[in-house]
Every structure is written in structure tokens, then in C-alpha cells.
Image (tube, rainbow, N blue to C red; front, side, top):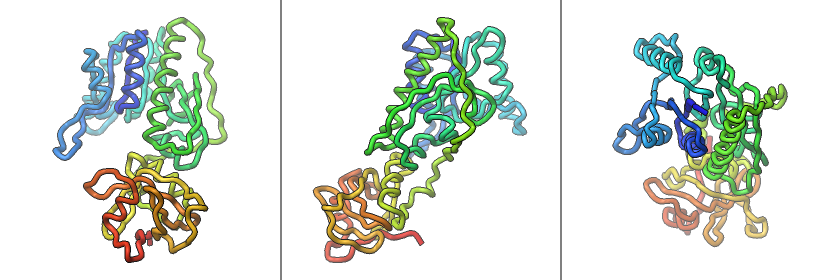
Length: 332
């Protein structure tokens, strides 16, 4: 199969590598423009671009694919991308966490006679968690199961028919990091299965998405990071794991914005006292017990500004006075 691949982050690059390793020919890669990052704010290529350059795959990096843009420079890029896609010989287009909306005229190119259209790897069990952050929102909501859908794309937001669905359980200690990695593996295998079926002229069963159970996974904002200790221990625990690695749940402690990376619900037998919301009730082996609006949370891993991730007990004892009441600042 000759494939046009559109994607940007590591989740997409892993699928791209799997497609390449399975023997399919990636004839063109689309990815977002290089972005400035790090302390030096140097330009960095996306993981998809890095892989494409390693394998001598041509790369396009338009800022938009909308030829109706009012910005003349962006419109010129979109026109050039449209012309390049129109003149490229390919069988199917695969889109994974690209970050740009594909307008209908781009989808139409992939649906010309003799082609199979555009397929998207989406990291949820559609129609649950359409949108930008399905992995994080599934953990935050306390879902017990998620998965991957290979979707035949249309112009809507994750509304196309599914051609393959694969699910997995969300474990008790799951973070967005661990779930991302497991879903990336599952998505890579699934898209290769779909392309192999197309290459063998097997019919794909297209299943329209259910009208019920639609939810949207809005983009994660840094403003969501601050912990509200008035929430239940369960809710806070879910958010800490959902926001690992980005944006990292945080709370003010002795004037420092401390980040939280791992936690669990405290064993009731381990804590014999109660306190005010946000109060540090005591320490376990390496963890710290914190009073929540309902229940007690055992925080396991934390990080001071400019420091490394360390166990919560060591972190708090290094910045708190053991003779005083230790309490995290609560949201007003």
C-alpha cells in the first residue's frame, strides 16, 4: 500500500514506524511546523518529521490546510499542500494526532477513484471522548475501559464510521503516560491490520457511531492543574494521574508551587486522625497523608520547583517545619 501519513507527536510517530516496518510505502508525510521549545527556545522538529527524514520520506509542514485562509502566506502553503497531495500517487491516507483539521477538499483527494479514503487512529471508544484529550479525560472521569478506534474520516470532529475497535482496561494506578504508551502500541497494531486488509482486498465493515453516549474531551489547560482539596480524595487522585505528565497537578505549600506525580487513596487503617482540608496528617513509609473534602489521599511522588521528582515524605519534610501545622493552600 502507498500511504500518505499525517501526524505530529510520538503517538503518531509510533504508528508511522509500524506502518513502515510492515512493508507499506509512506510516500508523503504531513506534520505541523517546527516549534520552539526548551530553555533556549530552539526550533524542534516533530517526532513524525524526525522519522520521515531518517527514512527519506518527503515532508510537508503547512500551518493550515484551509485554502480559504485570509492570511496570504498560510493560504499559499495550503494551496501548495493541496497541489502536492493531488499529484501524489497513493492508496490511502492515515491521520494520527495531526493537530490540523482536514477540510473536505483534502478528504476528497483521498477518496478519488481507486483509493480507500482517509483513516484516523483515535484513542478512545467512540463516541465517548471525541476531541483533543481522550486519554487524559478517560482517566480523570474514572473510566474502567478505553481503547482505540480506526475511523473512516469525514469532515466532522471524530464522527466518522469505525472500521476496527480494540479495547483495553484502565488499571488502578494508570497515568496518562502509561495509558498513552499502551494505546500507542494498540493503535499501531490496529492501523497495520486495517492497511493489510485493504492490501489483500478484504472488505472493511463500516459501523456508524452510536447516537447515544457522545462525550467531548476538551483540550487540557494549565489552569486546570491547581488542586482543589475540597474535592474528594478519589477525584483528586484521578486528576493527579490524568495530568501526569501535562500540566502536572500542583498546589501551594509554604509559598512554593509543588507538583504531584503519583498518589493513591489512603488505607483507612493507616490514618487514625482527621484534619482540616489540605492538612498533612502524617507520613507513611515514603508517602504523605493529606486531608481532602472527603477522605484522605496518600501522595507518593512530588516535585519542588527546579527540583527532581522524589518521594512525597522527603519532599515535604525538606520544605516544611515539622513543629507546625502543615497545610496546603486551598482554592478560594
